[in-house]
Amino acid sequence: ILTPEHYTERQVGIAGVFLVVPGIIAAILMGKLMDVTQRYLLALRSSIGLASLVLCVFGLVLGPGRFGALAALIGAVGFFGMSSLPVALELAIEITYPIPEGAATAILMGSGALFNFIFIFLLDVLKGP
Image (cartoon, rainbow, N blue to C red; front, side, top):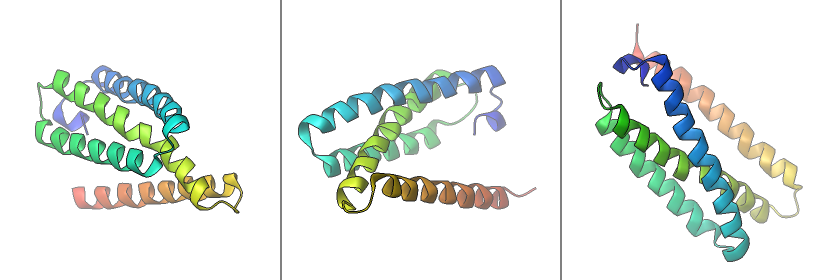
């Protein structure tokens, strides 16, 4: 996403750090918060909604010479997007209770990988030559 906008490999790597580090911090915080509140659905809706909003802003800001703003937005996407993972996994485990935890997790992770494959393929086709 950043390379066609003429950002360097170093900048793309820094953006990756801005995605992962806040995401890990948020996932830990969200896990602790869910242990206390048990409000899984509210947390999931909030985190995915905020991540979607930030991604829309990211799409509007994307362009050359805006690395600072893009890095901040990527950090926000990581914070809100990755914090939804432990909530989604815990909610899936709660909903599918008699089923073993590993099965619910495997179904979610497998379906996520499948959709990633489909979307990457479709985006590559839509991009054209």
